[in-house]
Image 1 (cartoon, rainbow, N blue to C red):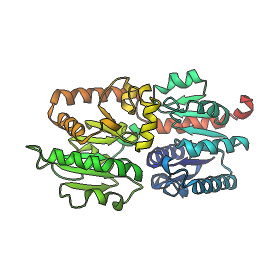
Image 2 (cartoon, rainbow, N blue to C red):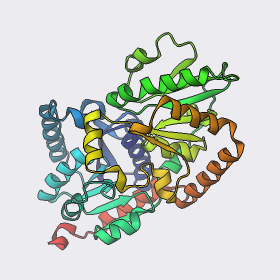
Image 3 (cartoon, rainbow, N blue to C red):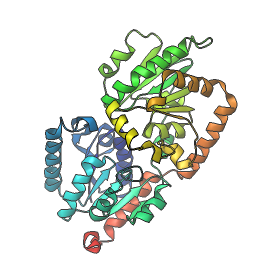
Image 4 (tube, rainbow, N blue to C red):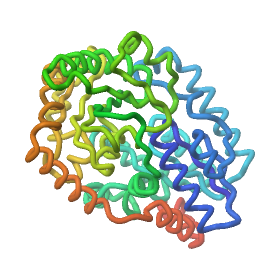
Length: 380
C-alpha cells in the first residue's frame, strides 16, 4: 500500500519517522512518501519536501500567505500525482486541515496522527475532523474521554514518544555538571526565549558553588548555529550542541524547557525540569484579555496527563530570570522535591502506556484500510 505522510515541524518528523518504521515492519511492500524531515527520510520514506521549506509562525502568516498557498498547491499536486491509499496527517493543523478538506472532497482516505489540540483551543475544528477525517489516532489518555464526548472517531494505542526515548542509545555530550536549555524549534521562539535563558544562566553562575556549572543549549533540528550565536557569543560557560537533544537531557542535573513536546520527552527521560513559555507581547495581551490561560490549569503535556502539577510552569509574565533561577536551584539542591518530581514522572509514564505504540498504530491503520469501508459515504 501507498502511504503519504505530512509533518510540519521537528516533533512531527520524529513521530512520523517511527510511524514509517512501523508501517514498513507491518507492511513489507509499503511505499511511503512524505512532506517531513530528515528523520522520516532516514526511516525509509521518500522526501517530497522538507518541512523547513514550509514552516511559518502564526505571527508571519499575513506576510507569508503566498508561500503557504504555494506549499498547499504543491502538496495537493504531489498527492494527486502519487495516488496514495491513504494520506496520514501528523499534527500541524493549520496546513493539514486544508489538506484534509481537499482529500475528502476527492475521496482520498485521511488518517490524522496526533490530533489537533481542540481540547485546548478552536473546538470548532471538531466538526471539521468529523466531516473530513476518517480516523484520528490520538496519543494522550486525557484525549479519550474528550473525543468520545465530541463524537470524533478515534483510535488510541499509546504514546510513540516512549519508543523514541527508550530506543535511543545515550552518550554523555559534555563532561561535568550542566543545566540543559531547550528554547524551542522555531526562530521566533529562540528569539524570545534565549535572552531570558541566558539571563537565568548568569544568575545561576553567580551563585556560590555554581561557578563550575555549564549550560548546554540543545540546538533544534531545523535551526543553525547562526540562530543562537547572538545570545551565546562570548559566553565561556555555554555549549551549543545539535542533533543530541536526548543526550543533553539525559545527563543534565536539571532542564529549563520551552513548553511543547520537549517537556514530555524530558519527563520520559527522567530529568527534573521547569517549563517556561513566552509569546509575543501583542499575542499575550490578547490572550490575557480573553482570559485564555485561565481556562487551563496547565499547558504542559506531562502535567495534563497527570491532572496535577508534577513540575512548575513559568508562563509569560511569570517567566523571569529570577523565578527561573530559583526553580533550577531547587531542582538541583532540594532532594525531596526532586524525588517527588521523579515519582510523578513514573506515574506519567505509566499513564502513557507501554512501548510499541508506533508499530501498534501502524497495524491499526492497515486494519482500517483493509476493512474496505467507505467512511466518507458512511458519514453522509
